[in-house]
Image (tube, rainbow, N blue to C red; front, side):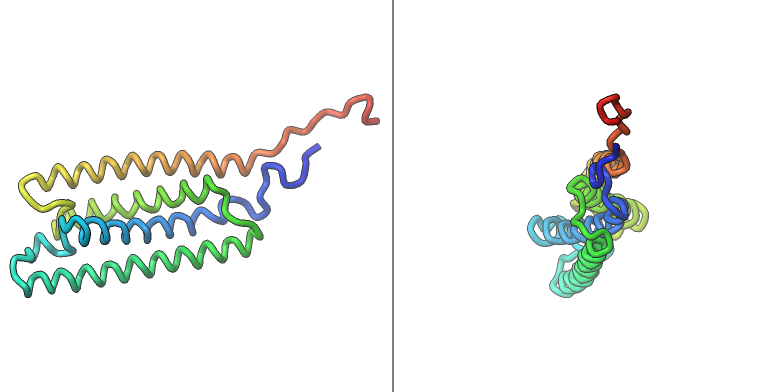
Length: 176
């Protein structure tokens, strides 16, 4: 017989996928801004278009960085509220694999889209400005693609595990 609750999660583990991915996008944006913009100071939002070589250009880039951080923060807050709502609907917390997989997919998606659009298509900034900028840009894209594949595998495994149920045991002569 199928035992209630084994391998099944009420409305389903898929309830948590979108919230986890959105949260991953927001956290990916915050990590980019904190690590690359502020700590390493490798680039600002428009450092290729308007290099921060004087105070006015630095102020302009810092303002754009702040707007970027505010947007990333709002996406993160949206992810938290979506996760909270999903937990209310499912009446449980998100399964670890769904949360981790979704965060990785969201983080990688942020890096892939931002890297392709801002670094390669628009060229408003690079991961690290300088003669080897393309190397850093492509390295970030390759690492992000790997993280996306890893996160997708974790997510698929976790969601697939939620679909599986215990096999129905045949009735034995003793059960009759």
